[in-house]
Length: 187
Image (cartoon, rainbow, N blue to C red; front, side, top):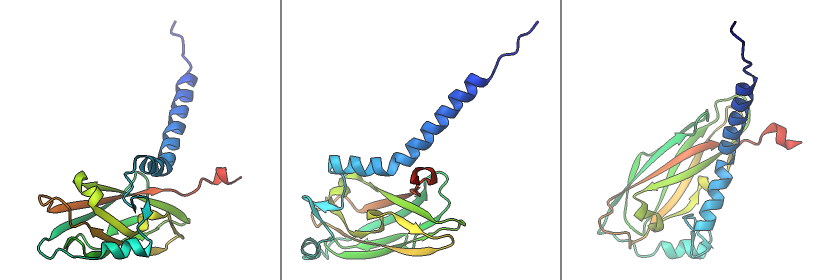
């Protein structure tokens, strides 16, 4: 006689794993921010001074190196399950070190609910990170879009003149994460 085994233990373990995976995905944005601040990887500041302050931004704009031209490429992806339309309006630009450049990304919330998103940047080559300065960036703050709403999101950046000569191309990639507050946690 074959004895039937209960699948209750498997369902409990599967449920716990699903909850832990969801919690990890939800914690990615604040965790990334914390790690960047602790390690100093965050490129939104120079020596602890925010780049949005006029004195720092003005200092970065001096002495454009017209003898060099760097290609900056832009890519955008959505994290798993993020339903927004999200892409760069410009795929690449030619930049002289020291020159300020403005580009735009497009985002649209095609869903029927209000949502909040956070864009997380990544850059290659990694040697360029300390030479690439985001003066203004949609990635500095979470982006809230109402159901069906769209927005042009700006990025104002500048590359240092001391970028290594062998660096000819920089790729800046953004991944868009769902940062919509969980309804259950609003209690």
